[in-house]
Amino acid sequence: MIITTSSAAAAAAAVAAAALALLAPASARNINADYCKHAQTACIVVGPTQKYTTIQSAVASLDDTTPYTIVVQSGVYHEQVNVTRTGPLTLRGETTQSEDIAFNTVNITWSAAAGTGNNLTDNAYSSVLTVAPNLNASLTGSGPTGFPVLPNNPFGNVDFRAHNINFENKFSDHSSGPALALSVGYSNSSFYRCGFYSFQDTLYVGKLANAYFKENIIAGQTDFFYGFGTAWVENSTVVLRNCGGGITAWKGTNTTFTNKYGVYIHNSAVVRANSSLAITGNAILPAGYIKWSATDNRINNQTFMAEYSTYGPGFNATARAANAGIGMVLTHAEYSPYSSPDRVFQFPFTSVEGNTAWLSGDR
Ligand SMILES: *[C@@H]1O[C@H](CO)[C@@H](O)[C@H](O)[C@H]1NC(C)=O
Ligand SMILES: *[C@@H]1O[C@H](CO)[C@@H](O)[C@H](O)[C@H]1NC(C)=O
Ligand SMILES: *[C@@H]1O[C@H](CO)[C@@H](O)[C@H](O)[C@H]1NC(C)=O
Ligand SMILES: *[C@@H]1O[C@H](CO)[C@@H](O)[C@H](O)[C@H]1NC(C)=O
Ligand SMILES: *[C@@H]1O[C@H](CO)[C@@H](O)[C@H](O)[C@H]1NC(C)=O
Ligand SMILES: *[C@@H]1O[C@H](CO)[C@@H](O)[C@H](O)[C@H]1NC(C)=O
Ligand SMILES: *[C@@H]1O[C@H](CO)[C@@H](O)[C@H](O)[C@H]1NC(C)=O
Ligand SMILES: *[C@@H]1O[C@H](CO)[C@@H](O)[C@H](O)[C@H]1NC(C)=O
Ligand SMILES: *[C@@H]1O[C@H](CO)[C@@H](O)[C@H](O)[C@H]1NC(C)=O
Ligand SMILES: *[C@@H]1O[C@H](CO)[C@@H](O)[C@H](O)[C@H]1NC(C)=O
Image (cartoon, rainbow, N blue to C red; front, side):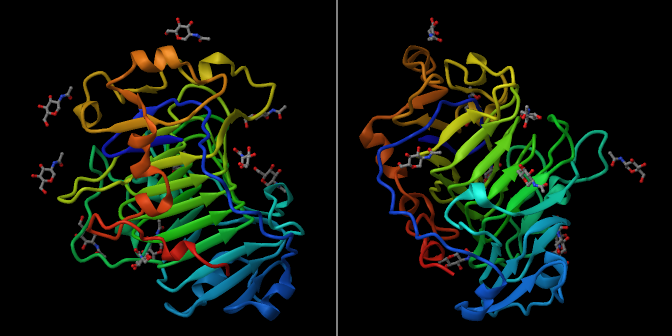
């Protein structure tokens, strides 16, 4: 288990795993256009010979509130997808084995990055998939607290889900500015057997965002996970495509209530992309987490960066212990408040736990 919560943080962390048991896997499921005939919600199909040939045109055709499923037929879709509606929406990629990410056949690709030398004024514009009610809700902004939470900004999607889809930001083959595969703001979202591929800032879970990732692949080089909201990563693979950047870089949110905003990586593995990459012992620093910078007080006493029950070649207990004060290796009792989605997903603007209704059931 890797935890980074509150304020800003940069980290290189160990191969992660923790003791909780998993639910039994769902039975094999063949997803294709026929799925819409027996879907539990209104349902439409996107594909090269369908009425809607792009995912965004299908999303744009929906009203704001009716629960919908969109089945996406096999193929590569080069487009940005932007979900602003509030009603439940599930995207399902065509597959013969929905319980195994290796059988995914749908890729959504885009190529864009923000930052010096690139043309985008905010990271938000680079993302392959955005789930946020409006532009303000998706902006990263700058500095420790980023673009502010606006008092009257509405919430976005109450229950967005994606199954069996790869999201690839192909801007570059190395870190060269924030190039998001996913951006979530002011919304609930969950991702099952999805792939997220970029080199910098692959996943953005922003202000008032909840995001749950199960059996996903998240690939990158620098700051794979960043944001201000709450992300739980379950039974997933974090793929290092090169060295030189943090795995987590959480900024947290300044609130008047106790919050557990942060990223929680649970029962998961950190691996290199392939054996031809010169990534060895230096991929995970022996000490684990590092400070964002030597002097930046956004993190140096405001960030909680911790591990519980991690193991593998990237875990050096001696060096971790010597790093106390920056990163922490938790006892079971210390880990307990962060040990499940129910403990970390809180209701907006309160410290009340158990905001997980959007995780239950299957659509
Ligand atoms: C789809 O994405 C995966 C993951 O990046 C990649 O391995 C595969 O080659 C892509 N497929 C196509 C047809 O581009
Ligand atoms: C930025 O925009 C200019 C003008 O449209 C274009 O020539 C240039 O290629 C763009 N740069 C990037 C990195 O996209
Ligand atoms: C998403 O769509 C909304 C509504 O059209 C728009 O205001 C917003 O700028 C878009 N978001 C991004 C990141 O482009
Ligand atoms: C977006 O935020 C700015 C404040 O930075 C505000 O002036 C503007 O009205 C907001 N836009 C919307 C559509 O709420
Ligand atoms: C998320 O889910 C909770 C209930 O689990 C709900 O109260 C909330 O409205 C949903 N949407 C957002 C954006 O929080
Ligand atoms: C290894 O992974 C890197 C990063 O994803 C990629 O650029 C490279 O092409 C891969 N090499 C092989 C041989 O697959
Ligand atoms: C946090 O918010 C409070 C007001 O709620 C403000 O006084 C304080 O300056 C803020 N701190 C930072 C680091 O933004
Ligand atoms: C997923 O969970 C199973 C059962 O706990 C475990 O064997 C497997 O290694 C996990 N996968 C990853 C990527 O950690
Ligand atoms: C910790 O925060 C306090 C203010 O809350 C600040 O005065 C101090 O410099 C910070 N220490 C470090 C090491 O950043
Ligand atoms: C573990 O860390 C200690 C202290 O930093 C160091 O002396 C030792 O060489 C490290 N062991 C490995 C296998 O990296």
